[in-house]
Each structure stands twice: as structure tokens, then as C-alpha cells.
Length: 325
Image 1 (tube, rainbow, N blue to C red):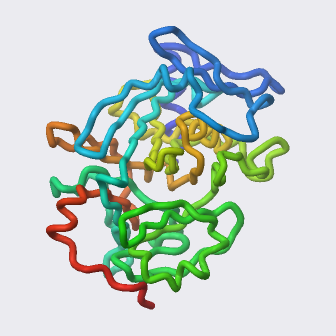
Image 2: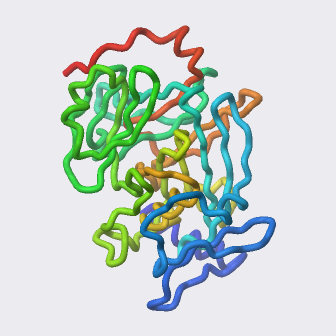
Image 3: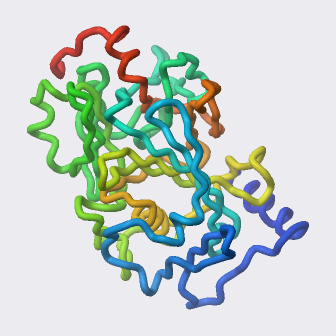
């Protein structure tokens, strides 16, 4: 129902503004960035790189960056794609783990309802918040650790990754099939598992996302992804429908999974995984002056990832325990 309404809305917007381009059958999908220097095609499905080794210069030039609270930068990027992706705005957060401490927040109440929302994050010490992982019904999918406690065991399936926070505050993305040892590691204080993996350790695009694609590579939706940059920063990218202003940015139209892999590689990620997008996608960054800037989702979710100022964590957080079952 929501997607049908979104498509109808896109058609109406297109009729009143610019007509969404529809690629001819067999024409490879492309991605274009719009910046001060005009529009530049930076990705083609039939010439997609198998590995991203550095940021794409056209994407870097077209991204407008803003300084947020300590440890946070956020940027905006205008992207044009095929079909439903004809007007897409990308919100990018760049987060410094040396300044911020990441935590996973459980968002399921006693009635098994998803209750977490980025709009509810009030504490000024929280500089960033985003919905985490994927979920089935009201519960998160896959491995979840909060405050050193394992709440859910690992999920099984190809192309999964886990975001892991250690006791010293360091973060990493690991293959979802290698969690046996990590479950016994008392240094893990927070973690969640998600899918599909977009980029592996060296910036490679998984074979399943390349031609011939072995997953649903044609479906378009609002997207959300998390990655680790080559300098160790955490990168989070959220796509928004940009055909009718931010008030309707939540409309679930946007990029495909391979296009999202390309976007994360072009932004400089060496590892990346998709998070739950669509009407669940929501993100908050705290601006330099202290006010929260929120891109809202339509529904509440069962899991959130937040980043706090490390000095606030050292003052307020209780000592972390080993993973308990």
C-alpha cells in the first residue's frame, strides 16, 4: 500500500516538475551526481568496478559537508539514477571513533513491540543515531549485543556482516559467518548483524552483487548503509526521495543494492553493509550548535545505533560486563 502510494506520488510530482527518465529496455542503469560543475555520470551497471580502492572524485566534489558536534561531519549529495531513482538525495554521516563511543540500543518493549526512533533521542551527549540492522516482525534479525549482553544469537545466511564495538571503543565490520569466536570474546560490548554485505575488506563488491546478479538487483527503495572508511571513520549513508522536498523524503523510492554498493565505495568505504531501509530508515546528527537534525522514518524499529561523546561516556557509563547468555 505504502509503495503503491509512493509510486503514484512520484508520477504526480513528475508530471508537475520534471519527467522521471525511463531507461529503454536493455539500457544499462547509470548514476549521475549533480554539483556546481554540472552533472557527471560516475557509474554504469555494465562497467561497474569489481573493487573500490578510493573515493570517486566526482562524488567527492559534489558532496557538500557540514561540521556537526565533535566527532561528526555530515554531507549532502544529489544523485540521479534510472526510473524511480530520478531524484535522490543522499545524506552522509562521517563519524570519528576516536572521539565518539558507539552503543547498540534495544528497542523492543515487554509487549514485543518495536519502540525505538531517532526522533526520541534527547540526551545532548548523543551526537548520532540511526536504526540498526534488519528485522523480522518486531525483533531484530541476527546477532545483537547490548551493554555486553548477548540478546540474540547469530543469524544464518549469505552476505551478512556484523558491526562490532570493543571495550576500548574501537569498531569493525566482520563477516557474519565468523562470529563463533566473537561470541566468547569478553571485549565485545555492543554488536549487531545485518545484510547484505555491500563491500568486503578490501573494497571488493561481492560476486552476488555483480553481473550476473544472484540476488534481487532490480528492486529500488530508500536505502541505508553503514561502512568503515580507509582511515577508520564510520560512514553512514541514507537515501531520500528528492522529488517533492524533505517533507516527503521518506517516500521509499531510490537505489538498487548494487547501486548502493557503488555509492559506499565512491564515498570511500572499504567495507559496507546494508541496514533496514524503506520506511524504517531514520537518522539523527547533532549540529555544531547542539541542535539535533533528524531525517525521520515512518515507523519505529527494534534496534538503534548511537554514538556519544567519549567524555560523556566515561562520566556516565557503568563498567561493561563480558557477554552473558
